[in-house]
Figure 1 (cartoon, helix red, strand yellow):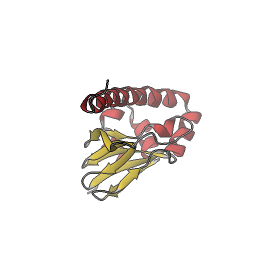
Figure 2 (cartoon, one colour; figure 1 turned 180 degrees about the vertical axis):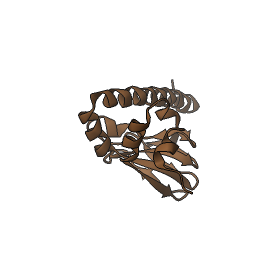
Figure 3 (spheres, one colour; figure 1 turned 135 degrees about the horizontal axis):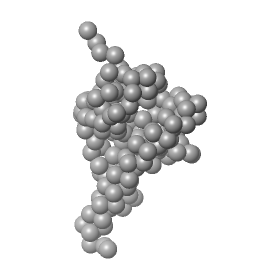
Length: 156
């Protein structure tokens, strides 16, 4: 028998400790999606209206340098979050993402979640706090990767 989405969300670190009512509320903005290996999931500059919880597979986050082409910033695996730009105006992606393997994920509608956060500021604060940690981690990974890119090129 298939499990309810809210019970699946309870096992995801991002939602750890949230009560059942909040998990049901979040599940109401969610759907399951699949991406084929090599498929583009997001492109820098395009509207960011969703975020994903990767349940299976690998996703690469990339940025493009004219002199080098695409540069990998980070690879995400099962249990990790893809996308935080849905939460911050102007709601545009900052990186490219593509599936390295077949990816199964849970997609969350950003407009739906923002609406629920407006109705319940405590939920908004909770999600903002949790996503702030993701943003900090991504910025650190990006900084380290760019240091590596520039040292490899012989520049400092």
